[in-house]
Length: 289
Image (cartoon, rainbow, N blue to C red):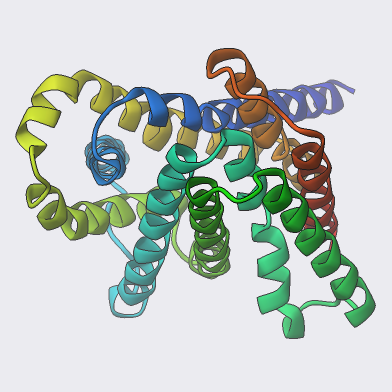
């Protein structure tokens, strides 16, 4: 009886932690808009802070070694390129279009994963057709809501890039994480990303003045998302059930939308609401599959 209570308490705690992590990730739009630096510098701040924090964490655990590096490093390198592109494109989308639009379009990612893993999944062609139809219809509703707006359309395009790159990243992540512990993956990912992005950051016009004016915000941004949000999410995943995790993942788009309405003064049109709900429905069905 006591064991069952402890298990239930752990599941509840895990669910709360996952939901909290989703709220943190849902606040991306606020800080991406607030911190007035180059978008690439924002991405780099996450990598360098994540690198330092996970290095300390793994050194304490004495778990820095990467098993089978010849095989794993090329995969982690590809994962790193994909996730850097995903973060960069998402931040650009958040600045070019509304937060709700960017986050809803990003949630086409599970549908994209299902499409590219169709042969290895048990989903039927009929169900796949329904998922794709729901997702594309939702996207068309969102595109229609902005009319002819170059900035909004570019933002939606970048959000689509996020959905695709994030989808491929998660396919690879699933394979690598079955062999390599997640903190080790994150450390090597942050290390490689820091090195890859650094030359581009240094070539950015006025980067020194941007860093000197915004360094506390950049450190806080990196720490909040690369460390706090990630560790809370990882701990929640350990404690709660997989099906609960999938459901709680949808806290993010709703949290992002509510926060943007309150703090950024954005508005929701009926077309965005309908489009967002269609995309979320397609995404939920994809995860169920």
